[in-house]
Image 1 (tube, rainbow, N blue to C red):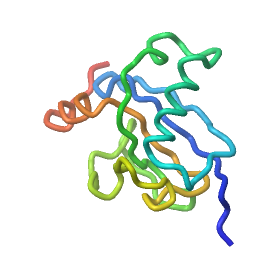
Image 2 (image 1 turned 135 degrees about the vertical axis):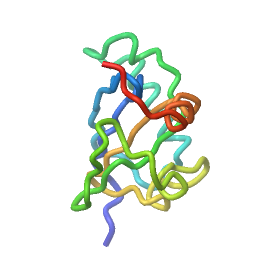
Image 3 (image 1 turned 90 degrees about the vertical axis):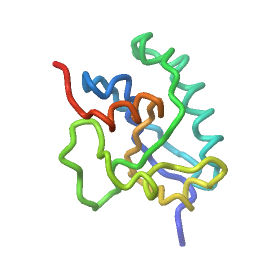
Length: 126
């Protein structure tokens, strides 16, 4: 029987170029909710989460992408892989489970326009 609840790590990506990100753990996540519902939940949570610097709280995140799944291979990229977008970017309206999210999945939460810009010219500044 599949577990309806999961522990997910969401990596808030503020800047790809500067490798500026912050991982947050969310427990007891319902995998049957839609991607849109989870995005709304995460945005609400980070807007009031104690200890999270204001630049991360106020950033305009809009896209989730699977970075890593439990017992799977990890990418060598420091922020996240730039490959397999069609498979790994979570689609609006889709349920988390149907998008491949399972217990202990790690997700990146970022602004799509920043990602497209970085993907076209993937360089780091630091």
